[in-house]
Image 1: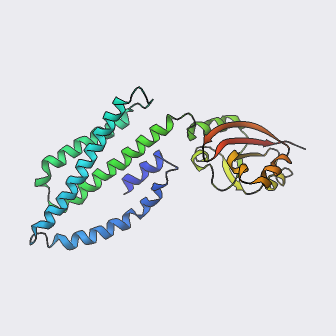
Image 2: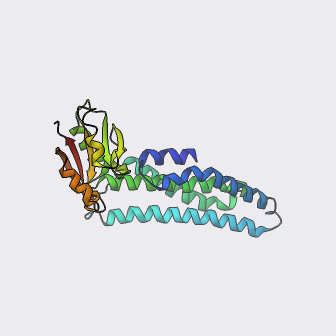
Length: 248
């Protein structure tokens, strides 16, 4: 679980499904309990051995179909997509294909007690490969969060240590790449109170956030500010805007 968990956190710092991974050891303990219980009965009931090997076969065939199908789809749609295979992704895909073929070829020689190791290895490689593919597709987007974060970081002065974000975790996929302290505030009035305590105040908001809150849209007009940077983010957020409070 540790080997699977850490690469996913590195590849996809904003991925939601990664928050389930800490539950993995508890699920594994439950499965291990059931596995040990039936392991002793497997000698008396050959159906148990066939059932567990069927699970291993299913995982291997799924991994093979997914890997070969993905490679075929990318090659077939090459003219319509800017996706390209990185060396690390090719190694992962080849590893899954080789592992699937090896398991299917030797599954009759694999003992029942060794099954969980091969299932965990296959599913783990699939998770990491999926994360890598998702990260590469995300990086090819024009409004890729990492690229937006780089533009925001390059726009900010070096001596700025914090940015204020209007709303609650609306830009997690972006701010996780910004090397600044991100402080969340609810109202524009919170920014007004900061002008007396800080020399420079930079803040982030999105246009959809304002459209749903007319009073806050009006409050923004009452604040003396400059637009430093703006770029389309996504349909549910609209444009992301980096603003700067003017000194009075």
